[in-house]
Image (cartoon, rainbow, N blue to C red):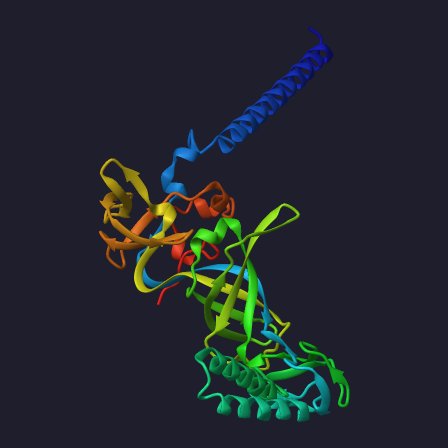
Length: 365
């Protein structure tokens, strides 16, 4: 074969070899890429939902104070009295004004009482002269005397309570008829709060139950109690509510509380201090009773422990027997709680529930 032909054949074979090698490299890269994708996208476990160690929450049993409330909106109010005249006559003395403060039994108005004095004296004489009359005649004269005495007394109108004049309905010199309005008094030293209970909550409350009044705009909190629960429910727009009144333990006027202000009424359903509490979702039940899973000394060890429970709230329950402070109970969290944590956090093993905020667990001492 001529030299030139042999050279051409050699170059052709080298070129073919390079293409084969390039094809093998490409095929290897594709296989490696597929293996990488398959390996790194493969789930770590066949069923992560069943891997309880990833989703376990731990709660350290501890003594705490717990309170549970029913909250409603309340409005400060006060008893209102309309002062009327028991007798008729012209107002001889009447100088009160709106905004004046009056004390109980203070004189508000004086009517012209000449006729009433005359009637009183005549009735008194008749009664004294009838002491030796028949029993019926004596009783009649006595009643007439008592009526005249009462009318003379009522010619002076006095305040039934201590409070503030909020309305004046008459003026000096005017003629007032019997039961005619003279003024209106708000008894501001008897402030109370009124509100409405939902029908679904009526079984949770009772009179004399402790309440807290929170005036957020003032930064003030007062203690009180349920004074009255109406025996008749109201229905408006399909919503059934029960009127209720709440009283203050201390005088709120000292801090500027006046009728018409709104506040949050927190009805105390439960108050417990220095007691062992655990989250309610740590509880498990079987035929023997209520138990929890207590974290053991060994890695991954849990010990079923039966307990006796006491009072409870929506999120926590008191433990009376079976657990000691410092023990750790295992909790299987809900999906809502799990969604708050990243996979990286979950892969770290059990989570300490005491460090997780916003789950409704009572605080420590």
